[in-house]
Image 1: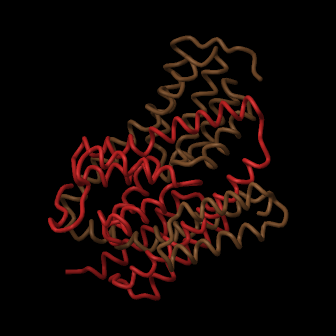
Image 2: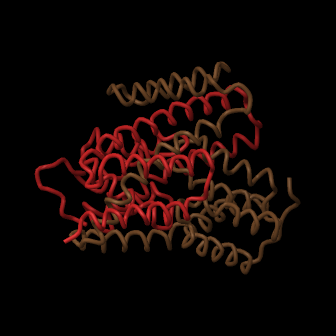
Length: 190
Length: 192
């Protein structure tokens, strides 16, 4: 996983990877995925939009939390196993300490309405961030080999099933994802 | 609070292997195995109370960082029930190493294989076919997140905050922390 084009920005070292993932993890309330897109693709440019989508598709169908998988793949692309572990521990170490502190405070003082409210407000902002990342990536699908209307239909179907009908993920990935892969396979034909 | 639990080394091992097994099955994230965790930890062994189980998920969702940290909180609470802070830290270690090790090894190997063979027609078909699916999943996540943090009544202010931050993030390069701060203030004063 180490064939990035030479002229593009890349993490300077393992500690750069660790710190970058720590910083982005601390901005993710209610999930980190969209922050990964913003930091890694838009700000640092370690990945292109297309690479992000590709890596993330793998992260999604493999077992394990998808941001954890994504961090492994991004770290591994530049520094092999050591990079994967640096990114992974950056993602987890400081947030782990924070969440344990929060649990201790919660046990000792109970829920504070102001804190609960603040967390709820930050989650709403993060939902907006996630939506924005989705819209940006949707724009990057313009270069997709499938016709635009097919992409839109596949996307709409997934959204309706997962967001509105709360369908479990595995059958959606297998069913709709499988059909989409078959369509792409035929389009890419010899 | 639960009465103090007596956990033998065999119980800890049982807990560890349980998380190892769940890790292999955790497609879509550890949260997709949470009903199985509930069956094992709460119903079968009574190592966790229902409140501790719910609180672990809610707290990890609210706090910064990946949501998989709810597994750490479950380990923490099992350890707390079994005797105190030392056991709780051990519980965190057992739970997190268990839930992450198998999936990490599988994903890393698969990603490396895929990257080496990325010119194969099947690998390209996979990544291109999945692209619209994963983009739609991201939009679904946003939708689900707003619906799940609401308090079940009039949630329209939350949707407005989410909508405005979505537009600002999409169209401007404003730093996320400003928006998070604004969201926190609005929430702390009970406005959303």
